Picture 1 (cartoon, rainbow, N blue to C red):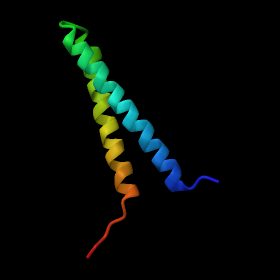
Picture 2: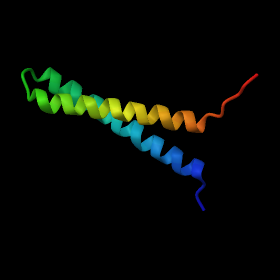
Picture 3: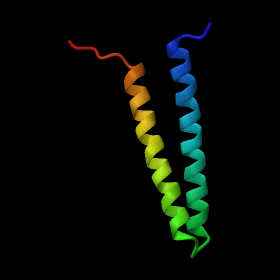
Length: 67
C-alpha cells in the first residue's frame, strides 16, 4: 500500500515534469516571434502556480529540524 509520502513524491515528480515541459513550450513560443500573448501569459501563470505547488509539496516532505 502506498504511503502518504509516496503519493506526495509521485505528485511532486508530476508537477516538476509539467513545469519543465511548460518551460520548453514558453521558450519555443517566445523564439517564434510575435505570438498569442494571452496564451503565453496563461502558460506563464500556470508555470508559476506549478512552482508554488512544488514548493509547498517540498516543504511537506522535508521535516523541520530545529536545532
